[in-house]
Image 1 (cartoon, rainbow, N blue to C red):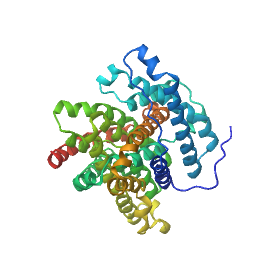
Image 2 (cartoon, one colour):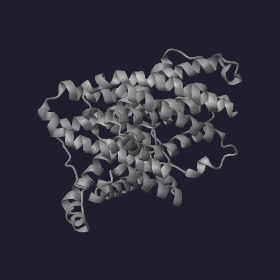
Image 3 (tube, helix red, strand yellow):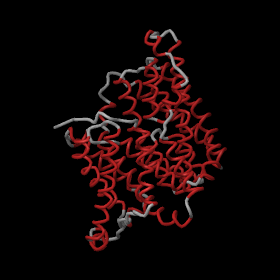
Image 4 (tube, helix red, strand yellow):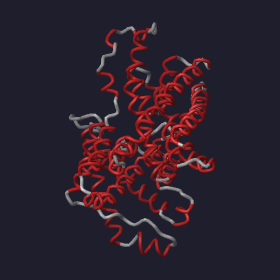
Length: 419
């Protein structure tokens, strides 16, 4: 198999901003994809509505658009285009299967969204079957999630951001500081080395995978430790994503409080979106805005951590080339957030209501599709055995204890800020 990669590349965050706005522009100029039907009550309706040729043609039309955008994204980020060409069709049609399963009336009554089926299908295949390298190399989870998040901006008017963003930033500051220091403290108490403790604390308190990667870059962390932390984030995010919405409902929390709790607690942005979707539109918007408020702190946190790491007595930090500059904040800042805000501004202040009404259904459908594709990919690349084949499980214990602290603290703060 060829693993040829393009010699030209730009960062993934700028790529998703570019591609997200390309999709929006295509819709605005009049190329609006029909929304396929996935709802059905019995096998007769499954055949007559979902599997009828005209509807399958709509599904294929979506495939062509998403495939083309994905190829462009893989090329621009310098990843293997041949692998993506071979593997993406498998990911797409597995995701379509998840959409069909989630479209059943009985399933909808249980509030089980397509992203859950995408995740489960991916997990079953990824953990019980041998995935070929060409499929594994084609997975682009972060690319899928971030494009979906840029498109999500089209449904969040700027007034919502101004209303919830200030509260979200207050919550983010309190949560990040308290949870980070608690996670770091408990890690040191358990005898975990400082490098692992810093990456783990950042992952729990800020924004999961992105925070772990940014922190690892700031301290030039060990790649094996980073991989372990990422595995912890992905695997613990799964039960939190599924069960927290139901716990919130049992507690009688409003959608605003629930969204703030989910956005401030769940470590991965995609899982926040999925859990918010389970609750409702308001919870989805609030959870996303709160998570973005924490994402905004990522650059600041990475900058502060890099300063700490550089000026401590740790021998790995004595290389003068690692001394931070002000550019670190910009380098670590998750720039896809700018795409989300830009899309929100466009739909809040520039486009006419007629244009918005024409394109919002198609864009919302594509947004959900990108998220579902991301969770199929997460399932395929998540291996439960990664957590249990290590000599020491202390990082797992520290992560779980810190996450428990995070859940309680964030719930209390979200309740008082968003009730």
